[in-house]
Image (cartoon, rainbow, N blue to C red; front, side):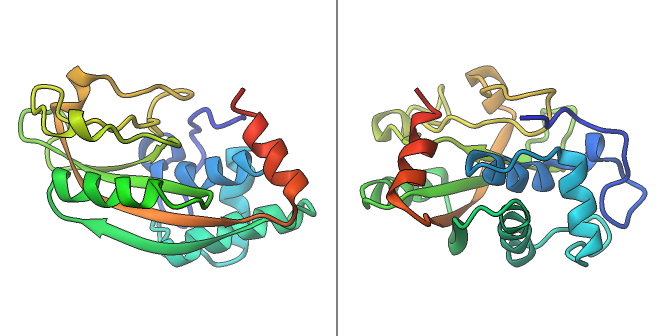
Length: 196
């Protein structure tokens, strides 16, 4: 997966992918997981060519269009669909994600966080992917640990799991859930085997 941050302009803005491309990167990673082989820069260009950006902003609806368009462009029949956004306290979000995780359906989950006042990024927001089977409800109430949720950070170079020290500097404000509609059992098996 080629999602290293880029100095290329994000959408129709003066921001760069490197500085502000977390939402684009989250959707790009969904497409890659389903077989897309293009780069993050190509995904940005696709979104621009198809009018999916409003300045630097990529809505949930247009994020779904981006993922599905990238897959279609490469002849991949699998698609995603937006299911729901979950807001509330960390406990409420984690409880809902636990219920969703029990459903025998493949899905992607992205997280929107806001940085706390003790962070050098105070007041800023950021989007990350939550990997499969991320929720450990016993840990959710351990406020020293802060989250029982593992995040794949879309800001740093390559994928890194946010550690406990970092998680104390931000608050989870929303989780967005996307259902995967596989084109065949064979593709579902191939995608799941990528994790092994």
